Amino acid sequence: MKILIMKFLHQKQVHFTLVILLISPINTLCLDNTNNSSGLSFIRKNEPKEGAFSILVPKGWQMEGGIFRLDALQAGGPLNAIEAKCDLTLKSDKKGTISFRILPDIVYAHPGIGGGFFPVGSNYQGAEIRQIVDAPTFLTAIFTGLHPRVSNMKTLKLVRLPGEKQAIDQGLSYTNQLLSQIGLQSMSYKSDVAAGIFEYVEDNIHFREIILTGIIDMPAALTWKNTRTLVFRAPSENFDQWRPVVDIIRFSVQFNQKWFLKESQGQRERANIVMKVYDEIRQIDQEIIKKTTVNREEIMNDNFLVLTEQEEYVNPHTGKVEVDTEAYKFRWITSGGDIYYTNHEDENPNLFLQQTDYKLTPVRKRKNE
Image (cartoon, rainbow, N blue to C red; front, side):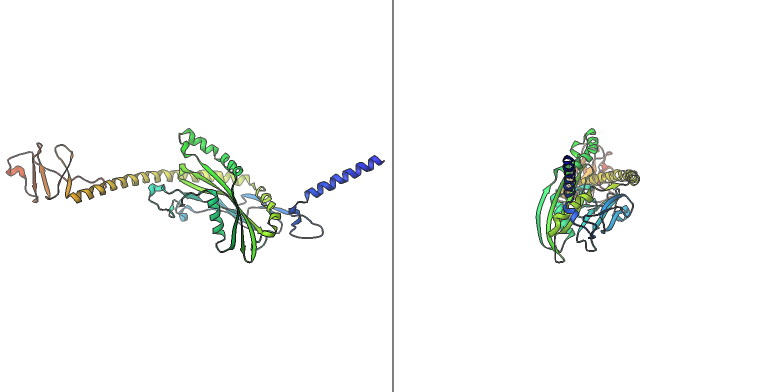
């Protein structure tokens, strides 16, 4: 009997210990404090715009935004219109005192795209031309963009995340294999990932905020983009207690398979359209580059000719280009190299020099004409 009692007490002790272990700091942050609840309740909700995925949301929180799409015509081109984008915010109240936000992936174009005719800051086929930066730098720019007027801002931590980078690189491996097979290893896609923790004061509340973002460089397409950009904030005094909620929400995402398949098919169709556009763009770019090179050569050549008061003529007998004075409007030449200069159009030297093979030498036609 004593043994049974001890065994029963031991089982109760183990059960009690497990219960204690399961009561984490999250469980003390009940949003609807009642006598019957001591934990934090999450509700699975669908992404509101297209039902693209479901996500766990703390009970009582608000959800804003969701999937959106850019119109290629309005955006100035297709580069940001291929993929559906997501800007979704989960927040504890209207002000977002505690909030979690998924920011959209935005494609940027490398300087030099389009033959270098588009300056930094301009739009090329729907993408802003912007010099690529590393993940920590881009992350800091995100913070500044989100909070342009906060005070007492401090950067507590700014580190790279090799684990997140490895996850992104795995997703890029197939594309890089294809590039390698066609001899474009130097064009392989690369990634960089970082996280930062910031403190600041906004609306007289002292906040702490964590931002995570990745950068994917796509040199084969002369573009780059941010990816997996997440923002979470809470008042500094209880940030550490709320921080585990980030991972709960983040890893709770479950994609709607029907939406995902439809989106993948749509992306392929839109990508095919973009590839056709790219082929046309590349042809145009090549023509622009060719034309520009020719123009530059002609301009430099013409400048030389102007400075030296010379002109280029095409010898009608040999087809060769000859440089000669531009002091006369008309130049005649024989097969033996005899030349007659005149300013009068009606003077034909064959008539009065008793020769028959004088031919008028035309000015060389410019390549850019």
